[in-house]
Length: 80
Image (cartoon, rainbow, N blue to C red):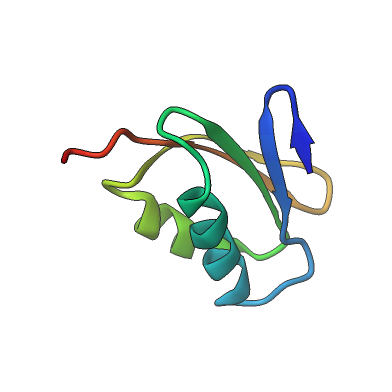
């Protein structure tokens, strides 16, 4: 789903490594400084995404909603 604020990737109900794989694929398709909101139901998926994001994307926020976790990532500019 694409909104004016950016893209939203709904990974609720998915188990590792699927949320991470979908996040990587989606982040590969956006430009630097664009944002992606990821919806998760698994705390383990949050840990995986946070570890992967180091050096690739800025984890702007994470918020525990009722029944799921909302994560906001911003793609960093490449160093090349």
